[in-house]
Image (cartoon, rainbow, N blue to C red):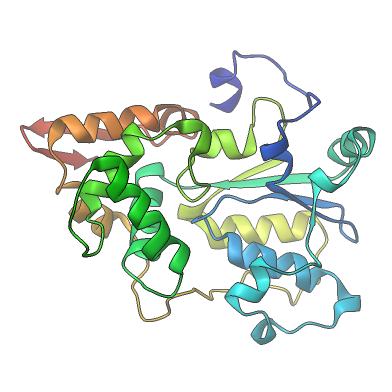
Length: 264
């Protein structure tokens, strides 16, 4: 479906990459592995995998806390290399990205970033930006409807990576990924990735999550949140993620009555 969405061309790596895309790609040299980070699609655990793949660091999984993983200076971005080196790495390393139902990803981003107070940037700064953009005056937590409304009216050039469409983050029309896995089959697909790059046999994709007391956002929870949206706003949200929905085969949302929808 990716090739079809990109115009049915047999695409190879096309440089130069957009700087924002190059900054989403992480390079692990010992196993010739390049991973495209998509927030809310298991990216924290993939960063843990990258650090664990480097035996010289001597890390254990329990040492790799959430914030330490995301701020680790030991993670290397493709954007830190020259264009010629980027081309060499992209041509010779195993390139991997993971996708997730884009609307489930939106719900996950909302629950993680706006229903908790541990990340001031989102719970306060971003929340205030949303209030300002929507001209709302309440000081309580941003509602899901307000969050979705903001997504549909914000400048897409400055959209936060946690809800920026996946195709814009990883650009599969410019980068011919060797493996495109899915969050919905994460355990199986992660095992396949680790076997492909010849990772140690005892290395498994971890199940750690940031807010351990919260249930993981799934189809049922996503449905509950999306039912809060009026039909017009829901259609606008679909439009924002229309490329992701089609390209990665998540185009399964259908209205069946006014103000409601179903998931096939």
